[in-house]
Image (cartoon, rainbow, N blue to C red):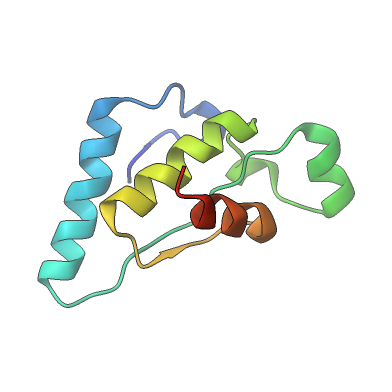
Length: 96
């Protein structure tokens, strides 16, 4: 696990967490495996409720989840799971 306490208690994104993501991706790829990160969401409570998304997979804000999306992309993850696919897709295409 990159953030053992889970999304709601993940705290700030750190260089240590970035290194862990990179290590996990390198290990998977060295063993000819794909790797995905599940489920990276960053939504306010009203948005969660109106869309039926799980609170337990939520980092709580767009800013927090975009750091995780960027980290997974930078590390070369094969798949990023999110309930916010439209926004994730736009983020990945933007190269931010």
